[in-house]
Length: 107
Image (cartoon, rainbow, N blue to C red; front, side, top):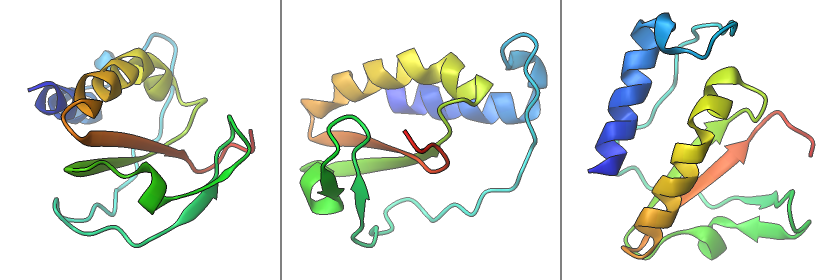
């Protein structure tokens, strides 16, 4: 499946910095990942595209929701962004929504 391919790509990148885009420098920091299947607490955040406040209830998928915390200026995120967009398009018809929260961008 596509999501497994993406997860494998991320794991590979973590341990093999040659996978990162040319001339990029990235700090390896530990993640505080929750176990798969953990229910996300409700949240509301401003959509930087529309300016509207959106709640998890409004953006979650019928079957599952993948919530990613990203940084839009990160070299790795820039590298995988087209694939993330394709992944979101491929899975929305199956009731799976991808939500990317850019936690450190103001726009």
